[in-house]
Image (tube, rainbow, N blue to C red; front, side, top):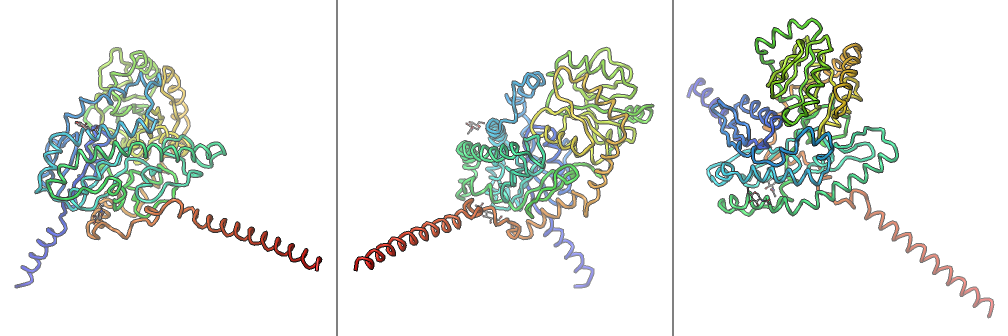
Length: 518
Ligand SMILES: *[C@@H]1O[C@H](CO)[C@@H](O)[C@H](O)[C@H]1NC(C)=O
Ligand SMILES: *[C@@H]1O[C@H](CO)[C@@H](O)[C@H](O)[C@H]1NC(C)=O
């Protein structure tokens, strides 16, 4: 065999050995979650792997190495999405910070996706084999079941900054004294009552997780039971599987989050969803942004809340306020409005990263979703946050604390308050300077987040689930961590000692009395 054929053979082998089959599980029917799922798909395909993608929002022209299992029709059936309504948020009728409701809702949503015929058909196909599963964590643990079915390692993907519920899956909860929960709009140093509340919250969260265990296990068995039976394997319990991930990717980074102590297998990769090359703006927007004499303010409340649920008065008031500004405003809203002021451009869909990347973009008015806060740091644009639900409050609060944002609460007075906030940010350069500084920290990494992602996924596969990364804290009982057993022994020892001294004293007294008598 000459060198040339050897080279050819080895490169063929290499490409075979290195091309893994990876299942990316992101069927939650929300645009931002699909953007995060697509990030994994894109980087893994580029690294030469075979990817299967469970999604509600499929690619129209998929890559040849990509197979999609689509659960699109799930979206319309959801009561849950009807709760995402501006009016209900303003009247505080919906409260998405209630963790019990959050977990139960998300289990139901996941169950709908997982019992969808396409996913069930896919699960029953015994030809499907995988080297690794990427499972999204979103207030339930059901997607880890795929790893049990394919008997392969899996990694969690968390769409937020690290917090107690996700860290408990790979290590242990953070200390509540300086690690407030992701729903708490407080930041260290905490006052006495804040610390007490955070400790209470830790127990509250435990109780919630305990109370949903039955529902989650039942759902898990219904979803994965038939597939396990068909493969002739005993399905491990969800309790066993959910703590068995090799690592967790966090859509997080120190530039947007807090300096936390993290276990070695929490890998922060915020920004991996952003394309390396900024896609070109559509021609009309490019022209508007190039020519805006006083710069552009971009306004978007994300994709989850449909603008049709925004009260008409609120929309009108926003337009009136924008009309008084000298800046050009690009407002992303899924409907047409009449009597739009000259400096306001309404768009039904916005290429958000490309708008933020434009040097003329002065300010981003956002709901403060983590994708938006990441993108704004990526491109260095200050924000005004109008948080609506979930982690948006804490994202906006962090941004305010970091000094590149102002917060305006949702209500009928939002437009008036927004005007004051806009005037402050465009007239005071400190917000822009701050976000540029953070943008430097964000970009100043050893490797790009997409490379980090691929590296660690390959690492887990090539080390059979990376057992060397698992934290010893994960399976250690609480009483051992807190040394309650030692405390018990010491207390017992003290009691024995005191008793012994008492007995000795009594004996001494008795013999004293005897001596005197004799
Ligand atoms: C846990 O993961 C390891 C490695 O990925 C695997 O070998 C083992 O079977 C898994 N255990 C359970 C209970 O799923
Ligand atoms: C999951 O969804 C299926 C139908 O899609 C339903 O029959 C089943 O009762 C649900 N399971 C749970 C635990 O809610």
